[in-house]
Every structure is written in C-alpha cells, then in structure tokens.
Length: 142
Image (tube, rainbow, N blue to C red; front, top):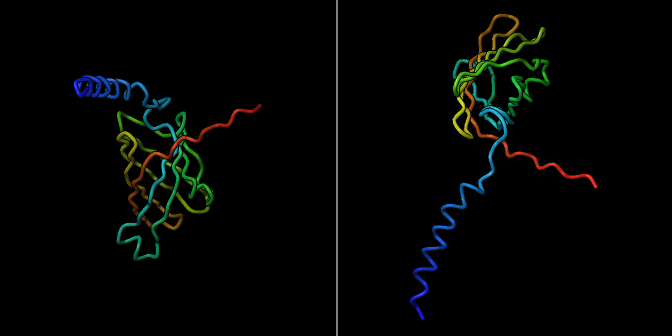
C-alpha cells in the first residue's frame, strides 16, 4: 500500500517545480515600468537643516518619471534616461528649485540618491530605497 507514495510524491514535486515558473506573473514593459514605494532619507547635513525622512511613490512609465510627494510641491514630471539598470532624471519647479534623482533598479528593488538644489542655492542630499508597488487589478465593467 505504501509503494505508491514515493512515485506520486516525486511526480507531484516535478509538477510543482516545472509549473511554478510558468504560473509566475510576468511584468509588462521595461524593468523600470511601474510604481515604486520608497523611503527618502536626508543625509546628516540635510537633517541638520531640518529635513525629515518621508515615504514617497515614484512612478516610471513610458519614459516619464514623477515623484508623488514632490509633485504636490510643483516639481514637474520629467523624462528619465535609463541604461541597463541605472536611471537618472532632473525635475524642477520655479518656486523650490531643481532635483536630480539617480538610482539602480534590481528586479523589484530600487535604491539611489536625490540631490535637491533649492532656489536659494542650498544643496540637500537624500538617499532612497524601496520596492515595486503591487500592480492594481482593474475591475471589468459589466
């Protein structure tokens, strides 16, 4: 009676190992496409000037970058460049100055540096890191 357990168990293991990659959901588009949940942290000099760590959502889609948090302050969406896994983008606002974002995307992880040159010439440096946000499921209309 126990003779069937080993062959069935082995067959089940082979099935799971071969089916798992096929069932894994593939991302659509280039590696950077999507939303990224990140934590932006000021370096010691920026923290000494009162800057605080904050959560942000970075959106990269079809060559356009936007920081959800900084967009609220008028920093525009901007075109980014990407080479292999490294990206960079410059965005600005008349009122608050310019920001340069640069980083590395590795699978579902992102990390990098943001340098904000304020309108009065202060340079504030931050690091950021985080992960890809889950894709939102779209509901079908009936």
